[in-house]
Image (cartoon, rainbow, N blue to C red; front, side, top):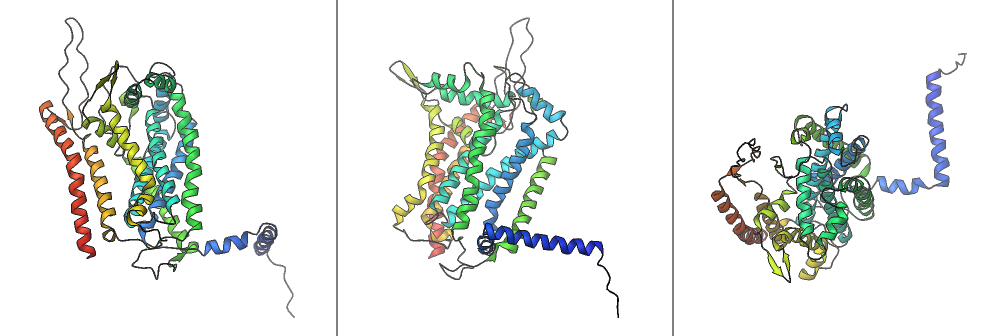
Length: 450
């Protein structure tokens, strides 16, 4: 008869660990019924098309944005006197600081780009319709907060480029009748730049990220899990039949791959593409030329609008109303207002109040698709206003004084007469091209859906 042998130490540890894990799971499930809640959630079906992962791209870019921002907060000094020096120190002295700054920059860029792409998919396919109006409105809020957060982050380096842009924002505040000077004094705490850097820092690292951290899970997780996911008509079995793969392991593996791809792409950009070299721009000096730089693609819309709108001034009761400065921010405000309530506007226009789980092809909604293309064309035309600059006039010093420093060359510089023609052509294109885009797109969609 064989003599029983004592199990070896490693198998005993494995068996004991497995038993402890099972006992712990049973203990917790008896007191907190996770199993009954978790089991159906892990089997929830998700669609397989790649376009449904655009929201995940934004989510993982936001996670990397928070992590890199936390690192930078440890070294940044939000004091107006030393803010610029601390950014230079982070870039050139702190180990890995420049890489973290560039990771932060490209994470913000990918975050906004993914939001725009995701919103375009939702808009053109009609995924915002009932019962997902609240999800759409939260997405619009996220879009606006992301743009505002980006503006705050760009100003924090306190270099010549950053504070020149902030000076333009102060000009818009000062142009508000009656209360403009009070608004400027409240924001800047006196003369420019005053104490605006600590205030922007508090907004950038506390208030706005806090709102984002509350809205992102609500938009991306809670509402998505509580509602049936939208589906493409080409693969759906019916309006109320769910198709796709389960969250675990099918969609969880795809999510993991998407996260790795997002982090890898941002890391490659941060490693090989240099952005915002503040040590070349120098600290802010009032009256000095700003460095030549192209605005971010999502900030260039506002900057281009300011270039294209004429410098209209209307004197009223001893005040001069700067109408030209108000039009660009009013356009942006009106755009977000219409975007926020668009699901209800379309429902009123079409009379369609039904529940929709299947996505439309763009050609199935000619007016909606044409309207979206027209809006994109409108903002692209405004953005084109930042691509060209007029050559600055030659500067001369008084006798006996050193010559003034030359203005930095712009990315694309043309003579003043040519620049005036380009601006005039873009002003006309702002009104003509969106209408042409609307008519052509609607005609193509109607022909395809016939």
